[in-house]
Image (tube, rainbow, N blue to C red; front, side):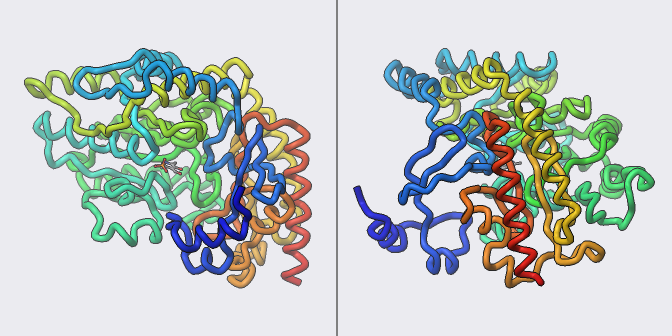
Length: 455
Ligand SMILES: Cc1ncc(COP(=O)(O)O)c(C=O)c1O
């Protein structure tokens, strides 16, 4: 077994870490994890961490689950590869498609299986543009997203991801992507207050469609709960208004449930909290739960029927060698079974309530601006000044802020890609009361330490 020092040297010599600040990495070196069990990760020196990042919001059933490993092993032995192109299929591919359809309302039932969140979102966009073109509306191709959104990093979808750092390497970006403001009530882009605002940020979609011309807008794409600015949960009217506007202008509503799908918010799909359904729903992370890359773009059967009749023999060219891989499908079927049989959606709701209630108490502290969340998707926004909502000083953020302090104390939470004073807390859905209480204790201690640094 290599020592940390040996591996560190090799990492710095050979590894290129994506989405990583390269100079910072050279200075501090890698954190090397060598084992995982349940909600815990262990680094190579044997230190235990409670992983309240769930990897990257994906390890919902926890690490090292024997049943998932067994499902993958058995499928690998039976047949590890069958393409989903050219009418080929495997049993798990068909069973997983039918299973996903059974979790969604009737009619939202046509399933395209892919490998990642970026791929499933790009599929949705391509489908919208392709069908409009086939049906004689080639100008109806613009896709509307939101500021502060994250939808992926591949060349097409990165145009909708509102992160300069992500877009820098893809510039010039593909055209036809627009944005409206996010429903970020704590820092309302219009300086308004809910509910007096009338949820103006949702109505901005209608104004934008009118400005651009409804015959040029194909789809609106949004995460039900937003990630990069930390668990932004829109007010109860928001998604019904978006649904209404999309219907009025024949604009597709595409819901990016890449993080929220399969239980994270305390419902199987987050939009259930708002009682609306999209035309296209994408989901990915919890399907593979970190055991295998897998994702799905699920769209209305009516869209499929239109596609069938729009050309003599249409096909959507959005597939990859590993799309619908049988091992990935077997793993996803097992993960969904675990979510259902172990009652993880209910657990996410109960543990989420305990977590949010505990975090809310920190709002009394002078450095906590806001705590927000839904189910096991929570965030805490630290500030220098409660009144002005000024973020923590750059020096503290550069040192790693809250996230680093929690990590030192054995807790992994995720910062926003641009702010280390914003902690996003997303434990695996198997988390228990004791682990939630540990999370609260560590965050409390870290906030005290942060406060001392400020004063
Ligand atoms: C909401 C959302 N959509 C899409 C993606 C992209 O997923 P992937 O990294 O698997 O391509 C992410 C990734 O974090 C995400 O959070």
